[in-house]
Length: 192
Image (cartoon, rainbow, N blue to C red; front, side, top):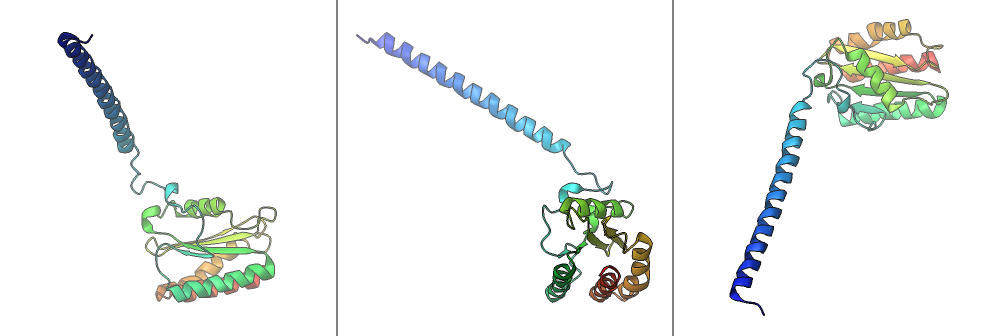
């Protein structure tokens, strides 16, 4: 038979059990959130100290990836159309990426473009026939990254000439679309 004293002892036991469980829950919660907060605080991105690879999108949007927003939608469509036709005719892949100036420094820009080229796997793996044109207007930087299979037809010195003689004159007039379009047409002639 349950007596008054037994019921009080049961209530005390349950209350103690509830407090113990509550204390365990609070301790575990504080540990979890404390560790998460410490981890988050330590994982701050370096400011302008180099390549920030976690900002590279997982996959390209299309042939033209305008993260600096220097092209209109119609211009992107035109560039994508040119690049798609060229790819279907030659199997060579050419992609364009504009880089937000917060992604890199001017000194690390070339390394970032090469990293994106490799990360996105521009070009066929067996032929290594990809080209990535990287542009940052704010950093005042352009890089044409050639796959090894392309370098036989288009050397790094030739890409430098295309940048200096074809693309940059248009860029000086803030005509980025025409500079890139003319640069593409010149590249197409060289590697076709």
